[in-house]
Length: 164
Ligand code: HEC
Ligand code: HEC
Image (cartoon, rainbow, N blue to C red):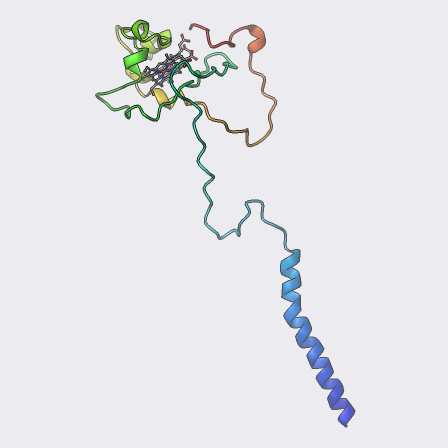
């Protein structure tokens, strides 16, 4: 009688041990989520990337890689005012009137045409929001590898000197 009771207790103890340790073992075997956090956890914003630019002229241009690519901005833009309905600081250097004095490249010829291709006397309002297409340079490695080559071979890009 005594022995059976002992055996029963031993079996119960083993079962209890297994019940307690099994979830632990399972948790260790669980696959690691690729986003580094539990599915229900809020998304972690990546660290803010620093723009490279300094003063205009102080930084090498990134070559354009395909036709009609808006060139990336080779200078800092943080200190410029927001582009508003009344104001556009980019144009104080890049407009047709100002570019020579400021030794800045003139905005593209395409920026003086309306949607039907008609030449306008001033910058088209379609091009008013410069940073919608032009972005400052930033040291950010590509998130995924790619082997995009652009059409440099046709001589339509490179050196950022192409006129449209
Ligand atoms: C103080 C004058 C000044 C202001 C303001 C300015 N830029 Fe520039 N920008 C320059 C000069 C000078 C260059 C050429 C020198 C260089 O490579 O940095 C240039 C180069 C560029 C280029 C490269 C063009 C090419 O052919 O590769 C782009 C694009 C550009 N700027 C966009 C902008 C935008 C958009 C703004 C407003 C957010 C702006 N710039 C404001 C002076 C200015
Ligand atoms: C809708 C997109 C778009 C907007 C908005 C835009 N651009 Fe461009 N920009 C381009 C493209 C595309 C090119 C290259 C082809 C060309 O020259 O049109 C370019 C070219 C340029 C160039 C180089 C010109 C050259 O001769 O190599 C400068 C400088 C420039 N843009 C400045 C500006 C400024 C300043 C503004 C705001 C007033 C602006 N852009 C608004 C798309 C845009």
